[in-house]
Length: 338
Image 1: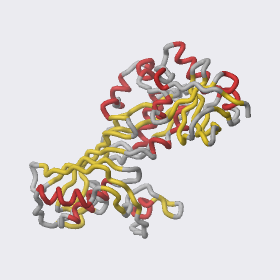
Image 2: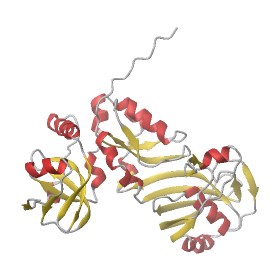
Image 3: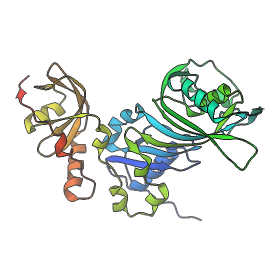
Image 4: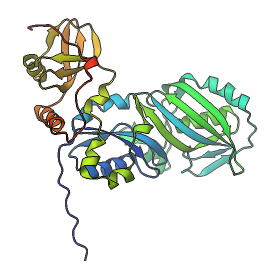
């Protein structure tokens, strides 16, 4: 009889892990594996990648989960492969073949179609997706053989590069590089491009290579993470504020930092700004986010004192990456009492 598996002692871990998600694993499975390896108490991912997809999956731990929505809303870049002439029930290689058509496509055809699908376009979300209708995921309806009406959604394709790709099969494929806004379904884009080419298509490979300023070259794999020591795993974490690279930095003195953390507005000589990352001066630490209206700094998502203490302690002990903003980004301000 096998001995019971020892329980993992969880601990507070704060930061961002850029994971290269492997093929065949769901985003949640990848998250749970990384969470177990880091022995983290709290974790979340920043946008689902299907099991068919690989590539950049930012994982947020501890305090970083408070800012994960920023990555969900971020623009993303994908590399994809679509097979022409074949449509499937799911729009990708996991579905059943439902239609075949002859393919007569040239590079010029691709160039003409790329123009049509660049910019603001409207997509009908696929039935095999996690989007919910009446509290139920669309894929649940699809598995039950039910197709429900879906409302079209506007998305933006900032860049679409396509080229015919020679393959060792009877089918012709195209390779695509797509930079797009949040909410874009690449499998739907592949299907719609196939229809525009007159032959149909389905997605056979998908890799996310960029999201919100992060690049797949920065990623670590689960296999590499598993082979590391505990200290090496922690060293892979980016600081929480790596999620706030587009925010303007405001630094508060000790008195105002404490009041800001209590949810109080602070007044200073700041210009209006919708995205502000707020730091305490001593010790140097991220306090949270906010926005500025008419000289008032209004708190948004705030770290707890325990989270700040843990992050600062890790910095001082050298057990984690540095959690301070670069000096060039600092902005000091004179204050008025509110």
